[in-house]
Length: 614
Image (cartoon, rainbow, N blue to C red; front, side, top):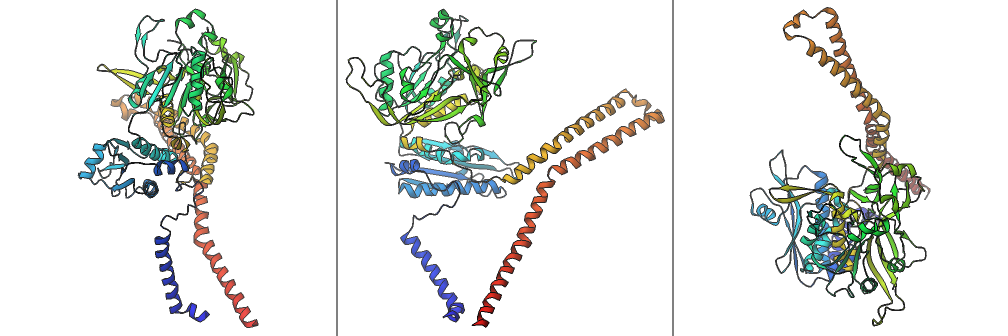
């Protein structure tokens, strides 16, 4: 039997069995997949699966990738392969309601013209002069379009969410309805402080481009049925009847994005000006927060000694550090939530703290948080604050992390268990609610995230922070289906070389000080040499004294020596990494084959000894 297995006939039989197994598995198990990646990068989530299987009408996707133009871009091609494989998996799960076309837009071709017509972003390649396309366009039966202009490597973790969002948008062709209740002058109008008309906030203009806005009064009794997302901004004047309407809206499955504030510095209403107190500029949601498991004190503001902004004091004065106006960066964001994962910088002005209450059945998921170098102070300290550095005098961090924004999900009970006045008995609880809560409203004002320039009579916004992106992401996320909301940020396809990164950080720490010192010495030497050359009359260059020649030559020698030391230092930065690479090559080229050879020899010897003993 053994002789047959090791013979040519046996090998041919094994080959035929292998081919037969592959053919039968393709026929009998066409959808079988095995994802061995650590973060299941090729396994679509249940939320995406629900979106795809729920499609009622066909959607066509056009994946544009410049295959020929990117032949030398290994990392980009690997990412493009992942995008393409994920799209094919989407097509398989959609079961006929998703059609995928893969297009390589060659230069001066109809495909390139079509990519440009869709509005995809092209990247000029300086070496070849060609344009690189790497984007996606989708159309539905109504000829509506949605695009992803370019698949950025930096946003790789949001790949599944962006694909699912595009398909979900095409499957729901009508613009989502946003119900807006605002206690701040987002629409512009007369400014009581300056007596001049002000333009609408940039944020409101951006929201109106993507959504249909319905404005509601502060005393509304019910939220209209066609409202997809209720947006509350500084709802300090909401009546009890309106709060009950919000309570019932959330319990019946409505989505809520609410911005409250212990100190709304943008509140210039007559009520706030008459009060001239911090509580006149505070907003809350009354009993609703308690019912959702959130603690919030409308009289407390978060100070953070690490995130404080540098603000101007006026002309001729040095900037001041304002630890009540904060610049939150990626470390303060939830990297897995699709609302905050793409963000890099957000500003928060005199924001409050959201605290999860123990024993609550509603899940509290922080989105934006402070550092542990923070504390709470009374909002009254901001009413007549002239010099923000006064806050540094009272700053004593309590080592607590406070949350400025959070997502509330899961079961919740009504805040009005006994009903409300003469209303018909409402809902008492819900298995799942979806609320995004933010404890700051000033972050929405133009001055905190965008500069607006007048360009031939047109307002051109130039964002310098991601505050607007945060709001658009939140509305986009909440206005989608429950399935889309459940899609989280995923891991990256390209895995980092953590050992190499650690070696690089250690080397930089060891040698950066030496490099900076040498750079300073080099700059001083070049400056002295330039000064000597400037003071010397060009007509008398031949009359330089031996002492001057010696000084110039000394400077030149010193310059060459410093540059040599600088090269040595920079070489040392990568020496450990190159040493690691050499060891890895030795292991792969010599050690691993040697171990395999040794293992085979040992196995052969053991088998031979057994045959002899037998």
